[in-house]
Image (cartoon, rainbow, N blue to C red; front, side, top):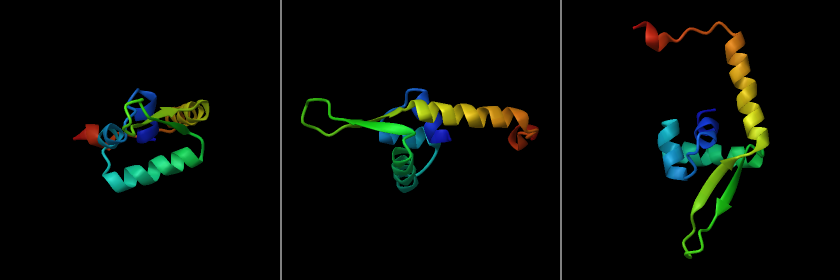
Length: 85
């Protein structure tokens, strides 16, 4: 969900997504691959300069999934254990 949220919020480059989601490189790559396979994000590549630059954008399906989990989170009485310190 953190990767989907980051992409929704405009973070589109793989390394920046990794930092935004607070993950290391290999898990980030694995999750990006899974999100692509499921059609939750799409990949855009190339900027015309000859260098391969991958960018990710969230799809309508990805937005729907985030909305679904945000709604579910609102229904569940989950306490934030970090803010209780």
